[in-house]
Length: 399
Image (cartoon, rainbow, N blue to C red; front, side):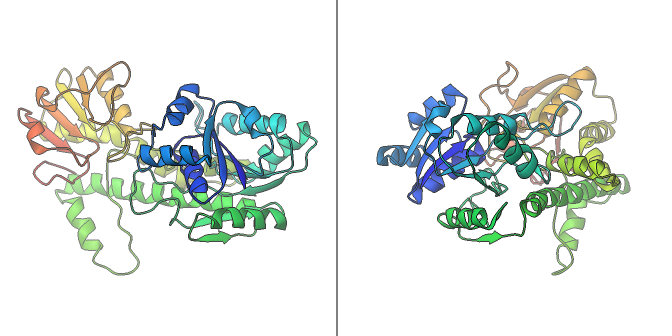
């Protein structure tokens, strides 16, 4: 089938390449001309999708990249894979979804299956995409929801073996979506309505947010009690039922966990339901940056104002270069607010905020926010104090 994928980030490029490998003819579209040109040159920007794979698919003719929306003409399937961030008030920002819908209304030339992979609140497919397109386009489309489940940098679970859920606004749409995803996914489940699929994605990541907040709060409690939270977690994890292991850290980052619960919170408030549990989890994880600063000050027994501090790991997750919602950035900004001399070290990040990665050893204090696999303990030689938020380097203090 001919497939047009709007957005070539982690989600969109993963779908584009997987569908092309499965034999579909795919156009990967993005408004970023530099990004699409790099992809046309065989340069992947996503961990786990190699330059070799991109080059092979380009050579086969099954995959092309474009920043021209007119290339949508004649597509049988159009996939929306665009960001759904929060605005300055932490409310859903659907501007990218709306722009994608407007592109479809303006450039689709024949009936097609429109699939939304972008995470959003229940009702987005029906009210924010289908209704918007139908108001400005005379073509009758089929619509389906298939919330993305991409885990950047995870070598064990990819687009192929991560179970997917799909649902169409009609039975025909559900059948078409099932057939499309079964062509390159091992496990696909059809659920009753798009709203069920949309809500399931919010539940998945709110579950993680709440449990991370719980273990982060436990870490603050055990820190005061002089008990190792990591030993507590390992002890609890010996129970073979009724417990799932989560670990503490500086906070949460990425495109899902810090964002999706707020989409659920928005839906709850819209129907007049209190969601204080979600609000509390969001607050606990947001406050971990300040909590870590206070723990460091208590360990060195003096204020950190004026000290040279290196934040180790700028991305939100180990072994990837994704900076979205990174708590490391919030830590840097907060440390600078209180008068610290702050640098950062991350071999995967070429530059951020006009700055480049620095040597860890040139700082008085190092705070390990993310532990990339390339990190060596020798890099901390010369630091007077190191605090490991990850708890993965045994020789350094942690929660």
